[in-house]
Length: 352
Image (cartoon, rainbow, N blue to C red; front, side, top):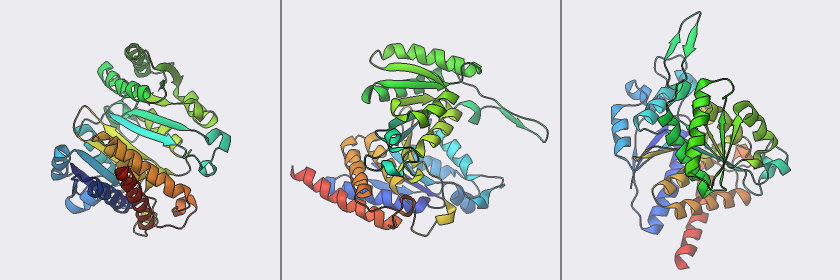
């Protein structure tokens, strides 16, 4: 399996390194062959060649089985002609990655880390499926000193394909899907609601309900346990998944996957580049490790992804935590602790 790594900016290289080390450990123990190829991306690529997504990087990603991203961005590129984030949007579009999967889960035993009351945080396990290549972020726009416009546009096909991803995910989980829109105001949302309702006929085993985005935002913090899978468009998904991410206690805990119709998936922690702590060995690599677990699932090794997740959660529950979770472990030390548990669990599984 060929895995292209895009360490990117800030803490990206540090957390990506820990994820690669865990994947490499799994490969060694299980007799797999993972080939890792690092490429410039984001701000690092702007500094190197003047563009956030070099042609060589894009070509390597297209030929890969999976892409593992660290983080992009930083204040040194604010106001610049080329911005690191533009490379991420371009990469998603070039690879046809139209569905973003953002899990939000409170690890049992870590409810005290959540800003919500423990009884609300308990058993929260939500997957947000966000449409990723349409809507306001990719619509026509104008920008002037006195006026500006951003166009939100969706086609039936764009809604159908991401809806199928969400329904299949719900079918493999608890069988509930909530579609989020603003159909009382927006024409695109009315198309969205009609199309999702039609797709639902193919999944009679999945219960579908609809919520306006403002009601969904409130419900995420008042009754998060009532959600299973949330399906929504690009802008709403960006906002709601970030809201969901804090329920678990830290942005550093969660990974994500962006997938399309075949081709490589893109896997990345949901946190930013955190330039204020870059290079200090204090970043939390959990999000990168969870992204690596999703990568394993995507390339046909779901069992190994589950072992990696279980190993990470075991370390979190036994007290080895990074600074953002109230602990003292550094990024490298946390990764090493996970690899130790991972090695033991893989050895036990092999012996059984």
